[in-house]
Amino acid sequence: MPEGRRGKTTKLTTKQKAYIALSATSIIWGTTWVASKIGVQKAPALEVASIRQFIGGSLYVLFFIFIKKQPLPTLKQLGWLTIMGILMFVSANGIATMALKHISSGLGALIAALYPLCVVLIEAIFFKNKNINFLTFIGIILGIGGIAVVFYDNAFHSHTGGFALGVILSLIAMITWSIATIFIARKKADINPYYATGWQMLTSSAILFSIVIITGDHIPLANIPAQTWGALTYLVLAGSIFTFVAFIYSMKHLEPAIASLYAYINPIVAILVGSLVVNEKLTFNILIGSVITLIGVYLVNRSMKQKQPMTSADADAM
Image (tube, rainbow, N blue to C red; front, side, top):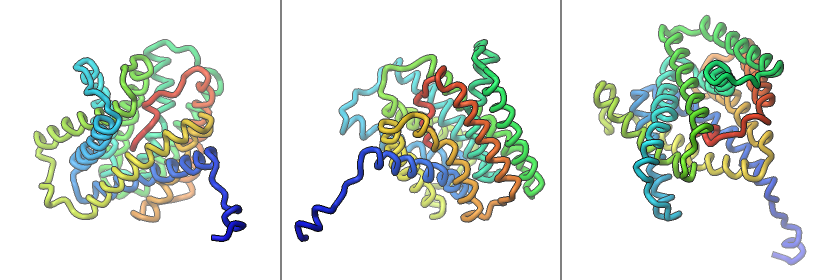
C-alpha cells in the first residue's frame, strides 16, 4: 500500500468503540427475547432455560478458572451464589422464558423493563425509603399506564387462552429480578461480579434441570429441533457472551446515563424484531403504550440516579 494512502488510515477512538459496543448491547439484547420465543416454540421452556444457563455458565466459569486463574468460591460464597442463582436465573430468567410460551417477546421485554419501578416500590413499602419525589411518582404512573395500554391492546388481539398466565409469569419474573437487585445492593459478596454471574448460571442450570426431571416437562436432547438449538446458540454466544463483554466495555468508557440507554432500546427492538421474525401483533397502541412505559422508567431512573448506584444485577444477561 502506498505511504500516502496508509497515512490516511484512521483508527476508532475508545469512545467510538464504546458507542459501537452500546449499540450492539441495545440491539442484540433486544433480539434475545425473540430468540427465546423461537427457542420455546417447539421445546419445554424450562429445559431451554436450563441448557442455556448450563452452557453459558460453564463457559464463564472455565474462562475465569483457567484463564484468569480465579480460585473456586468458598462454601459461604457458594451459598450466596446459589441464592442469587435461584432469584436471578431460576425464577427471573426461567419464569420469563416460560411466559414467552403465552405472550409476545415484545411484551415480555417491556414488562421486564419495569423492574426499576418495582425496586422503588419495594424499597418504599418494605424498607421505608422516603426518597420518592414528584418525578418518581410521575414515572411510576406513566410506567403502569403504558403497560396497561399495551396489555389492553394485546389482550384483544390475543387468541390464546394463556395470555393472562403469560403476563402473570412475566410480572413474577420481573418482581423476582427486582428483589435480586435490592439483595445485591444491600449484601455484596467478595467475588468478581462476572465470575459470580457464571456460577449463578451454573448452579441455576442444575436446579432447573432437576425441576424439569421431577415434573417430567422435558424431551430427549436428541429430539430438540434444530430451530431450538439455533436459538440457544444465539442466546449463549451473542446474548450471554459477546453482548455481555460489549456491555462491560460501554460501562467502562461511557457516562452511566448514556451506557444505561440500552435498557430503553431493548424492548423497542424486541417489539419490532418480533413483529418481523415471528409475526407478533404490532399496532399503533402497542407502540404508544411502549413509549409511555419507557418514558416512565426513564423518569424513575433519573429521579433515583443520584441516590441509588447501579448494581451488577443491572447487567441483565437475558
